Length: 395
Image 1 (spheres, rainbow, N blue to C red):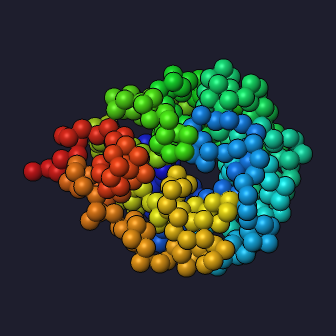
Image 2: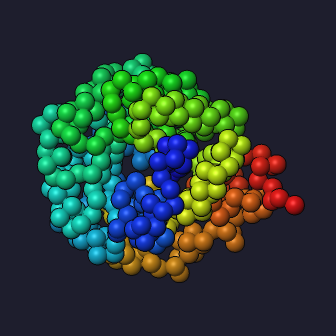
Image 3: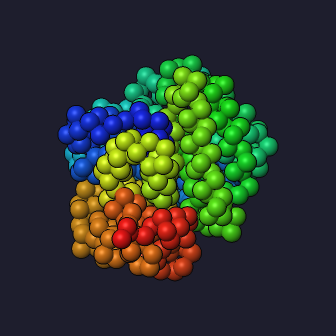
């Protein structure tokens, strides 16, 4: 996760994170990416049920729940362990988390235990009453997936009317005073929608937007050939930075982030180095604290059946199950042959990644994408768009 507005527009300085000692439990949510202890943000795919049919769904969600989804009592036991372990955030996801009736009860339980609770949703089920209920529970954030304007979004989500329903949900969150933002997964067939999305957040007063690079997992693996070209990704980053800067110049200051391609950090730094060297030096320090991809370290995933994964895209690798061992024990057990290496990927990545000057900042980028494209977990991520000149160490 790369904070474009934080870094490029100067809304965060190193001193902001240092003020909290860079401890996950103390840092505000917008500074968690700069934590020193990297306690994991835990994504819980609490149900496989979903009312949409998204082309890129990493969870391969279905119309109904999966067999043996965690019960309410089992989920509470897991939440209690996460809180004791020091996980700063639990992200309720799916499927569609609002299709699980006990979501409000479990979110309330999480916040009572001191966790920051957020949800990732398609937004279609957020009525005015539901938005108020989520606000009253103390939910920290609602991320609503929106992948273009109406025709593109509805086609991508597989259901006519999904865009209008999602927008109604977003407006209900705003009216209830519940922090809400957009989640936009970019690939070749919707990249042209990005300018319209910036227009939308300006028009609607939406305070946050995250642009997700495509990960080749679940149904998203079928879209690998429709990913942006490397030059297309560079153009996308320039567009996001340009539009973010233009909004800030108007006094409109949304939080803008990119997710799932940590080449974005060095790319942003190199642009700033040309434009504002003094700010670039501060950004370099922050990027070093960010450390890039943190699968298996700063982010983890629990599936609907209790299986633990290094991240939400790595569903083919189970590290254990919370019904058999607490998450805290599974996550701390570095004897697992993959998890142990994910705690520090630097000695294991190969090819251009191993020689890259930005390895400490990027963290080797997305291992799942490398494995999906090449069959080799430690090969270079094919979505890295930095040139050989940009990754070469100065002589």
